[in-house]
Length: 352
Image (cartoon, rainbow, N blue to C red; front, top):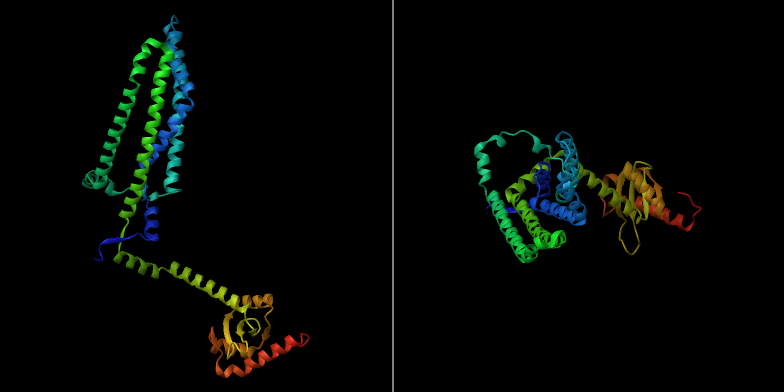
């Protein structure tokens, strides 16, 4: 049936969707980059983070014996400094990696239409329908699977590290760093790997669903084609491309001509004749105005004779067709021009 959406979206449909802010987007991909960046920072700066946490833990002990009125501002100032030093890098990671992830997925996109107020956004029934749509249910199922998978992963890692964790109370800070640190490294690596696998699967899934959502019926494609045919901008662009193709072909054919007949500046007709190869002279190209000037320039560069013959140029422009033999009534004047060209080739001092 013509109403079935069986066709891939056209370039126009994809552009219009993008202008509206409707693009393929994977939240899991962004989350994975954030997790990798944060874990990378934590592993690379683990010593500094531990020291900062240690200073926060030991802060109250440094204020023992100090009057409360003096200890409070000192404690707040020190705690604020340590908290900012701990939290600020993570805030920057979220901002920078978040923007970088969006750029990787959708590029530079300014979709102001998404910001426009719409009555649909306030429609309770429409919002409820979206909450229980197929897409929302799929997202819920994905989240549940991800939570279950990560829970099992954390459980297995903690279970394997349980003997070292049980020994921590008897081994002091060194045991804490060895036991907990080793477990955290294992946990980080496994969670990062799991996030990468999940995000890649979601990345592919989102793009497949995006393309599927923009599928078109044959009737929609026909209608779009009709609209584009009537678009004055499309018509102008097509006409411009056609003119460029004609000009390029005419100039290229001029370089192969035996003679270029002009009037002398506004008309140019390229003629080819080789005895034994063509029974009659052939019109390779015709040009007026700017195209004629380009043909004359190309002829001079290629060493093609340029002959000024106003009556013949006008007659050829009016009656001759490109890529065809010259009209029978113009055989004699064209033959005269060709004889003159051969005579000039034999005697370069001879002028037309």
